[in-house]
Length: 566
Ligand code: ADP
Ligand code: MG
Image (cartoon, rainbow, N blue to C red):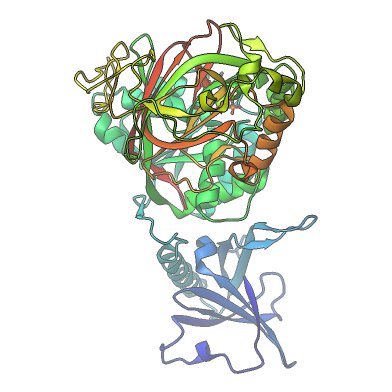
């Protein structure tokens, strides 16, 4: 929304149609004596109060911010006038705090050009139609991103998990989103899930020809169900093309925070994030969404849109479930609790890097941390996950390994590593439907030669993520896109101090963790990976949902699904 000084003649008043698409004069809905001149161009609705005083202010609403417009008769049957209301969600300064966020602005006018109520309604409808049409053409798009649009009129199934987050998803939907869908004239059917896997079963059997989009009002867990339900169908290839929408209603709203971030909007939380995602849903732009196929030890294969985590991140996610009632802040609570009893896990990690790096000499070390860096091995002497002694890094540095044999270095084609290497022969076939994972051998086979095998075996966490955000306030991969075709692999090796780990998570709020210069944090862009936990106990999560503990491997499928995203 912009304000302009309108003491100059308004060019859109020219009736020759060169500048203005539509021009009209209407009255205020509450006061007939207040009149406005309204002009609609291809990109904006300009409103100016008609008054005799000079220097009148013109308010200009950008149609990229408009989700709909409707015409209607007045409630009073004796009213000969008709009305039209346009619904905008421009960025406006926050009332109590700094920054801007999308906020609802309704612009409503009374049309009483003639004494005939039908003719007035027709004029109101002509305006509503023109504003709607122009708004559909004006969708905020990001340069370089390929978009399609949802079919219109769009029939949407909205799945709500009433227990997600603080148990308020349904109230949030009725309080904030329902009205937006009505304003945007999007017909929807509300489905309230009754139990875990209800949504999964429902979409597995649904007649998808009835739906133009499936929208999830919950945390990331319900979308995980829906994606896997679609991938379990015989017609999975077509089913997974159904546009998916996400509205933050859970405690873990990573995808919602990610799509908000992809729209290049300033950071938003809670209801502001919901409004932003509701706005994107009403605009109906669709981008492709990468999925990652994850193989579990039991040969089960699941499809993931967000993350595969082991160690600290998985522990925090699952252990903080009990603080669900406090909402997204549960992750901060969980982080502090888990930091207090920091664990180290033993395991093996290997991955296929996105670009073939020039091969270093066999068993040579790619990088080494500065000699003064405290080494994690001082903490680790036995296999099972174990608490880190509460000692300062300097005390532990007495027991450091030499820097040439140190922590997060990687080697390729190591013959003495348990993740041995081999040319890809057997592709891992799974019992579920979906595309073949051509880069993966069976879990019982060695990884191919082209893979990088991490020498390190002591980890605080391993996190593979394919969206920008791990939670509303964890901007884990600043450059990530929904369809960049990348698994962003992070791991933190043992030896990191508690303050350093806390610093990483605090810096992640602003996406600044990689700039911390932490020698224990490693980041790689990969196409596939394998993780073999050796510690007998631990947790692995996929999209925040706990899966069986054991060896796992993952393979990216660029653009397999479709996502409603501004
Ligand atoms: P949150 O972000 O709050 O964890 P999720 O959407 O991730 O919210 O949902 C949490 C879990 O609840 C998921 O495992 C999901 O499958 C499950 N679930 C979905 N619907 C229901 C329901 N009606 N009752 C219980 N659990 C459900
Ligand atoms: Mg969840």
